[in-house]
Length: 239
Image 1: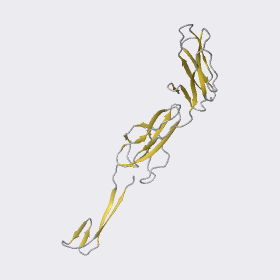
Image 2: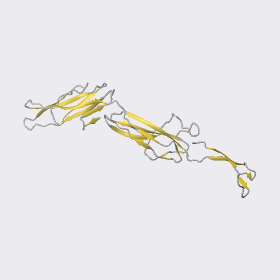
Image 3: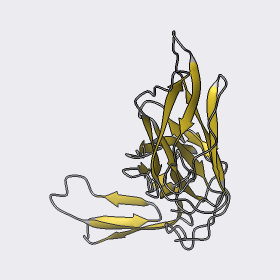
Image 4: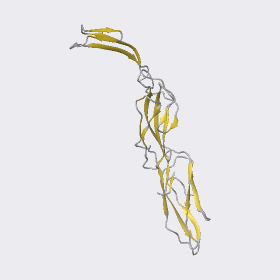
């Protein structure tokens, strides 16, 4: 990755093959530019001098290189040379940092708001921050999403629409820097838009002035004190 603002070419360590081109702009209003000489850059051998405009040469490699500082300088036809202009050939093997993602643990809607803090990269720079959503997975038990086994990676933005109810989805933020180093972080949500099912409701009186009849509780007016119990059984197979 060429960062022209800093005159730096970044590369990922271990990259087996690659190349980049250095362009040199120079002029001489008297005897004219005779040639531009390009120096070695790290383990990369210097390419041949360039004697014609545009002055440029390509550095290439076929085995993992090491970084270093390269240079270019111009000579005029009178044999005088310019000061060297340097560029850096620098390795970046560090993944982006600082990214985070959040979704609710449970959602009563298929519309999911995804919160995130983007990754950044202090070397070659960040190229992209992308959110993906997995395919839906069944809960392992009511209210519990699987710890792993998620497949699929659909690129989404926030808010996102989950495809189906009663499924777990894993949202992942992937940060990629300009030489291809990546980092990721994930969060899971269980979508449950179905209310719990009430199986039964039972009333039980605990005072002689009360009488429970199915789901109706009768009481004697002006009874000063009393109490009754309500027992409800409910179930929810999702969350």
